Length: 149
Image (tube, rainbow, N blue to C red; front, side):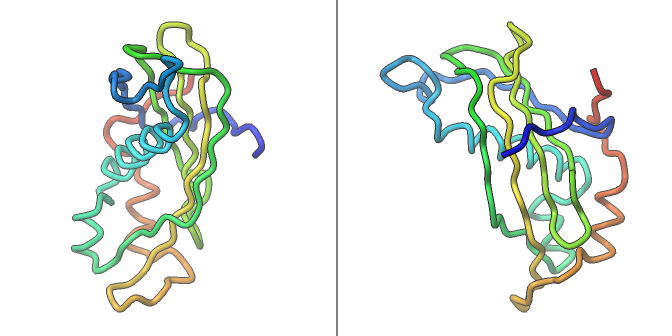
């Protein structure tokens, strides 16, 4: 995976504190938990655009995750505070969300990743292009947006 560009000005960030149950015997965050952190960031980004799961149901659409990629750079440990920043890098046919997980204490990037979503209609039919109602919401800067550092 190629290193992602810096977050866009319309990125959304959430802060987390690493809970004890997320660390392994080496006292670092178990690698599988980074998927959960990406999910928290992606959900905040979609929620800021009024495209959370319940919003999608009202549009008679659903998002399905088709790919997840994570690059681990530095470990997080119990009680570390981290910022998960998410932004869109593609929206026309599929939705690609980039994420960066940064240790707040050190300011260093711990992981970066990407999630790919496709849109499916209530009927189960795959939408080959992102529906207009979804695109309109995706393009609107949402509340909670963060400026580039």
